[in-house]
Length: 454
Image 1: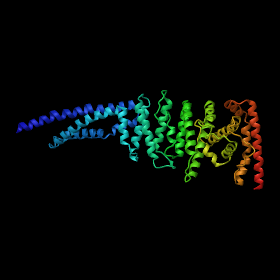
Image 2: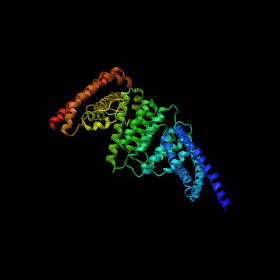
Image 3: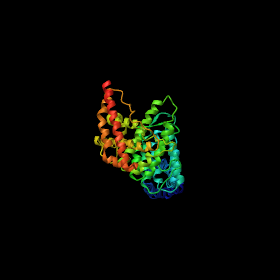
């Protein structure tokens, strides 16, 4: 009997204690090393934190702690030895499972599949998992595995589609983590030399917000994210991406926003049409400010229809005049100036400078009418403009700001820039300048008469 007890005692000491020591001396450094390598592999704190937060990792660490505590309590409480043995078995199983988990984390494709399964139905509890996956997506952009990236892009589209499901003809605001992820991914793509092409969307993430199928509307926060992305592309010299985006925006406006048949949402659609157009007026003004003349020339001449339609470019005298006066004289202009030029200081001065460049762009478009008239794409009657504000105060504001429009038309520097971009002869520029000044003088006279009559 005594020999059996001694045998059991020897077996416990000879098996359990060495096993615990091995677990503590091998498994813990292994886990620390894995965490460090995950950080180096993906350059992401979120991914190694996700490994730390895995249920299996937590069970292993807690089991190891309980086993060590039990080992010290065993001489005092003999029956606890059996609990220690159970924890030792759990430790061995957990270690084998953790090795499998490590292999999974070292394989981006498998890790992505696992993360996407865990956050297949979007909810507030899955925000962190989405952030982890977006950082994994960003890390995979540096690799050459197109199949993995195709799955990433498709998962991103699916996520966006799920968010705006059942929101037809509604303004959709996306989660903060999606906005942040798009900015990070776009910056990553812009900054690297290799070209990654998605199965649907080529190399930019902007067109994901141009909803042609579910027909949702763009939120102001989404416009701001799109503006930052376009500035990122411009900063890194990705003018071809901006042109690719422009063609998609043109198509979206022409075939989705403009050709709607829903009378119930007509006012909302018209409001969104206006906001969408304002956004692209601000973008072209930014290109003018940045001296991106070649890109601006491509944009103002872009059309995929015959006869040409420039749906995002104000192409009629009356429309341009109304936009200019609203920009200078009303709160409506703030919808165009809200998109700040990033290399300007923040504040009122920034908004004034932005406003000034939009004014220049609109006057530039007035000179562009020479080309449109020459190509028989339009036939302008400069004397027919009568789209004045209905209220007396609005008319008086317009009258006060007629001088601003004249100054812009006569600006010599602007005339030189216009000549360079539009490839017009000096003679044509002078003729158009005189024609525009005569037309503006005619508007001034009509305004005075309208004010007196009212």
